[in-house]
Image (cartoon, rainbow, N blue to C red):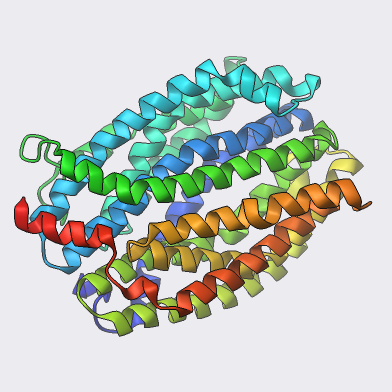
Length: 458
């Protein structure tokens, strides 16, 4: 850990050392959706809308992976900072048990309620079947999604942000070849994109399993040595539920946001989907620094180094702001060329809506970085309840009410949705920073007390 500069040494250098591999990792992760969108876009612009409509539903499942990852980082980084390696291994093993259970529940639930979900979204008739096919296919992706996310969180907690890059590079390369194979050669259409995504993750799971079982690693999983304990499960859920619930309800907010976008037609949801790919790529550096901040916060608080934890936040904020401004300028120049690459026969309506969405979304970059950094401070310090509150405020306290008000009482049209998105992020950051300034995050939480007690009683 000292070699990476988490606990001592040059902090900026340490942040870049861990963020660069994670940046590459996030690039590779984004390739799943980017590649799917590219090949689906070759079929037609309405098919892009079908994938885009289903996206937030997948994000709801991703919330479980995010919750487990938040628990892994908070627990394992704190244990390692306190030099309790055996405790870190025990909790890592317990987290894998949870990953399997949650993945099965989510897959079955999505299949059973697929028609109900699409019906609620008022899915346009012209994309209903494609949306249904893609949703059913992608429901089998939960196991690979959750386990790979957990693997990366466990490795990241130990200061290793490189291991996940290798696995995701393999998975992304597989996806590059499998997508056109299943979509065009096997004539599976949009279902082929889902199958390719699922297989690309499943095929690398054995490599992740082998790595995470290796005792050569700082943290490893050992099922026989660390049988599941109810007390461990309770501690994990205390951290996982707030983070996962926040992510889930946040994703549900995007589902409702999609419902309002669909009001303006299938082309509108397609434009939003294509535009979102550019925005996500521009956000990657910001997300990368924000993600590793949780590890720095957790380990420094575990070691009792509060001032360095504070410094971690402010250094990361400075990097995020500079990156966001530069990427916003670059992104503005790429909007139309990027859209035409993904949808060669894009209509003028799609190009117009995509440009407007990207304009507002790119302006949000600075505030997204700010929001990510605040979340990492609270997650890394074990205050996941605060993350939950912030997630609820952003979507349900600010964005969704503004979308409804703009929709009903103004003539803004679809522009009202993009404006609500920008304003909600600004308001969220103001509230989050106020909470940060109260310094409650440096205090020991009830969960942290349980972690301390578990190291004595285990």
